[in-house]
Length: 159
Ligand SMILES: [Fe+2]
Image (cartoon, rainbow, N blue to C red; front, side, top):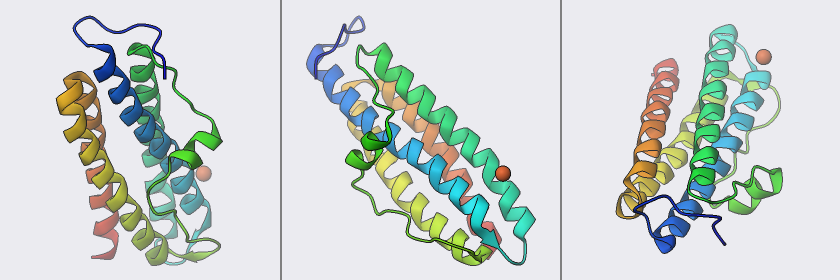
């Protein structure tokens, strides 16, 4: 990967590593928006409207996260890849495998599990970015805080 430039005070090697980590997080943030909409459309049964309507704000937040991550990549001189193929290529995490009309509990439990991986990978990215670029680390720290809150919302539906 060749960077167009680097920000002042950050060397190229660190920038390249930070961009690679951010690109991986961008892919999952984009995927999360798709997964959450999929659940929003297919969830059925008791508490339908509560769960259906709970998910749209989460979609908006993860899309805003993706935008922020992509623009951080561009700020660091990189070129964010927002194509569907980039999401699939980057995926090291377990895919979301619940499909069709399923109960609120089924979708909520699957989303809690999805957030488990998402949060753990974001936390790992924060640790790695801390060594490379604390500004990028700070951005993902803010993101993971929102994800942890959303997982708590989901947990509160099935407690
Ligand atoms: Fe909708």
